[in-house]
Image (cartoon, rainbow, N blue to C red):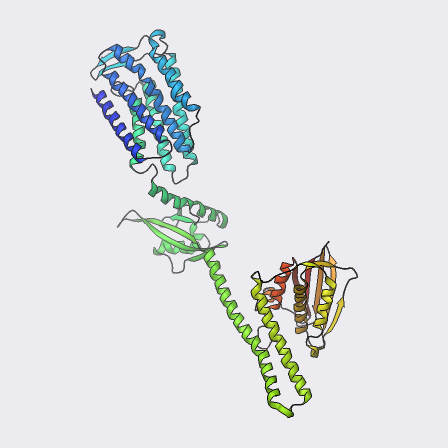
Length: 574
């Protein structure tokens, strides 16, 4: 009989494929999948026996017992989809209810139909045809209740599969679409049988459609699509890559973008503009479309990020027409910043060597010259000349000492060696002490000082020595850049919980836009050979670093030819 042969072939195929899955898969829900195959075999066995039954009683009895497999198959299929697609275990209370109680109740109703005729009616017949004998059922109300329950189970499976499609990563969405389609096949076949009377060799096509669904899933496994590592890995790289990727056609128009590229376009591009007009990428896309290759320079900047452009031709094979390009933007922002920092560090090192060599050479020349004259002059050098030469040598020695100390402080600023011991300290005495020291600097310039202190005691948390270094650096600059006979005004005041020390000079002033130079290490606003004041270029840099560690700040206002006012701000205690 053709129908029986189909049953035997289908059952054998499903059993073999189930055995293959058992030995080659350990995915979530595998045990439910294998139980579904077992239920499938049970159902097919019942159908085969029913079709080849020698009598009506045998056919009726087998068709009623077939409900065990009929109910368990969609149940196990739904359980498999739940665990595989949603990644969660089937609730424990649901297993005995759907896999035990419901199948037993429905099968009992079918088996006892001869007593109550509510499942199969009195018109149920055993018919003979050219293809063989089969049962033509007269369906009663209990049958339709059972069918309704089974459709609820199958619909639940479809909902689970549909939910998996909706929430799946784009890289695996195609697999879940196939799984969803396989779930709908038995439902369509059963509806065609019940509503349209469509049969397969005069029998219900539903079990064969379930066998087809199971075979399709096993085929996905055999074809390495259950979890197609290669395809999914490629799609994951496309969808999950943090580097923007564009798929463009031969004309340079964007066909598809990954999320990173879509986000970049949303933030940086005009939504109405084509990809060929997108910032610095546009000219590269236009060049690619015309010449079929990237230009020599492919480093671009989009927004605040730097990218290296890579393009890979898309072709269906050797000799085939080119379908477009996959254009990837490799984010090299970190490397670009690192390169800029390396260049800046190299420039700073060169500037450091130039500054230090220059600043060392000047006082060393003075010291060598003074000592040379003193050692060779003998009696020809008067006492006044000796005193003057010694003063120059001592002054240059102090300059060297200051330079060396500044270099040591600059080095220790970036390490734990630069210690700050904060203690409550009255600010006015520290300022007055620094002013007294500054009055002895370059006495030949005859700089006049004025110092205005408040009556109230202003107390700050400070390292007195380091804060004295701050005031000394600012006052030293004021003296250095003031013309002979100039005036330096120092004042201390408070406002809004802060103490402010102002140092004003009447010197040459600072040109606009030079703040970065003023506080940068080894940097001087006037770097020419004709400058009027020399120094390491470290004093103001160290000053800002020390004030940062005190929770304070320093700023200035200046006008060229008029003078400069530096303001040091520190938080008051209490």
